[in-house]
Image 1 (cartoon, rainbow, N blue to C red):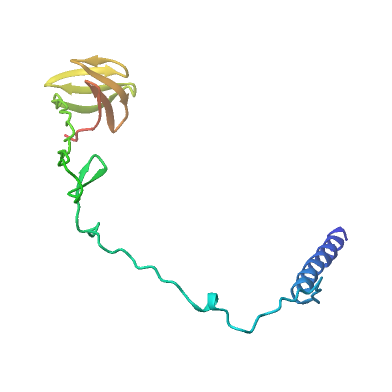
Image 2 (tube, rainbow, N blue to C red; image 1 turned 180 degrees about the vertical axis):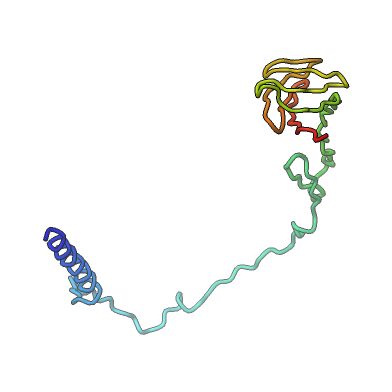
Length: 165
């Protein structure tokens, strides 16, 4: 019963709001006071004449008389008629490319797990059994999984899958 009462109240509220909207839109308009402005029907000389000013069109086209040189996102307007000294034209600065040294990885092969905690790993033809966290020849073991291992060498990380012999 509580929901029916709430529904009836909401329906009444919606009808009231829409009724107010239509009353304002289509209801009677009240005029507070009418103002009458007398219109002079006789022509006035001041209103009849329009004074035109002559335009001064003796200038160069600003769009055709310029050169755009982009210097790090800034455009420069050069070649205008009134310049006495030529403006400097800057060459765009080329960004310095950092050359990162390429890391040559040793030959790493993964043979599988031993007792589910150690891994059989061949690094540069040297067979080792290593655990998680151990390292050999700067190769650190980050994770040992049944199908792969995760290794780190000189800051780079790599995942190596198990060899199938």
